[in-house]
Length: 271
Ligand SMILES: Nc1ncnc2c1ncn2[C@@H]1O[C@H](COP(=O)(O)OP(=O)(O)OP(=O)(O)O)[C@@H](O)[C@H]1O
Image 1 (cartoon, protein in one colour):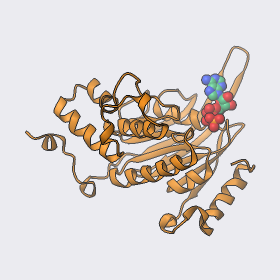
Image 2 (cartoon, rainbow, N blue to C red; image 1 turned 60 degrees about the vertical axis):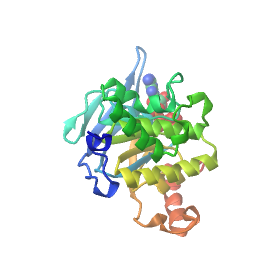
Image 3 (tube, rainbow, N blue to C red; image 1 turned 90 degrees about the horizontal axis):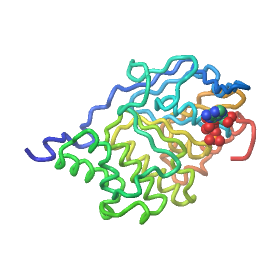
Image 4 (cartoon, rainbow, N blue to C red; image 1 turned 30 degrees about the vertical axis):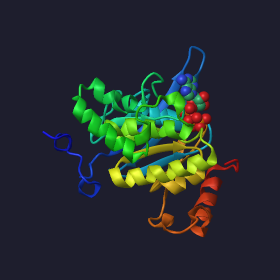
């Protein structure tokens, strides 16, 4: 059987949109120590529909990472409920792929081996793994670096490998925690464009954490604006479809208006 047949990698326009959906109701997170208790998240409710790109933006300490770690199953919530496609989240799972700000590649593995890592763990046959890693290396433009080690790559390239690795496992949802936070502005811009192209092609559902308001507006269909002490959702902002269809979108009137609105919701002007 040919690799392509075994894999069922279909042209993107024919790929079925998954009906994955995240629903969070009154999620509260209290960090407790012997001496004190700290409410990091206070009754946070939100939803993410299949194929949606949703960002959470807010000041440092508003609980963005805590929330994402709870969705990832890496952290438990204190009270509340959280489900993916109707199933309660009770730990990490292959249905969620993660990309963090810090580069989390295995330094001793090549680009290809990093991308194939989860597939290797699952015992996916080699020809199938190769076809999957070829597909995702091409998607992120790293075909020529298949054998390179992470130390030979720039920050942007490392994050492209991390995205490819997360997607290679075919997750229902991609969870991204400030993935471009450590990149220089130019690389950050090109990574944002790349991520949008991938999102449109792969029909991925994305939850994206950032403190960069422009980034959230540029990438998302909806933005949840959070506030701190305790971490709550202040407002949900729907980004109009077609916002990006103009040249120099980040300087457009509609874009700047949204940016101003979010800055005033957050209540400070440091972004
Ligand atoms: N393991 C922990 N134990 C105690 N407090 C914690 C723990 N993790 C996070 N916190 C606290 O919870 C609050 C929310 O932290 P979190 O990292 O989720 O916020 P954030 O919005 O992602 O911040 P940043 O943008 O600075 O990364 C912070 O005040 C933080 O100090």
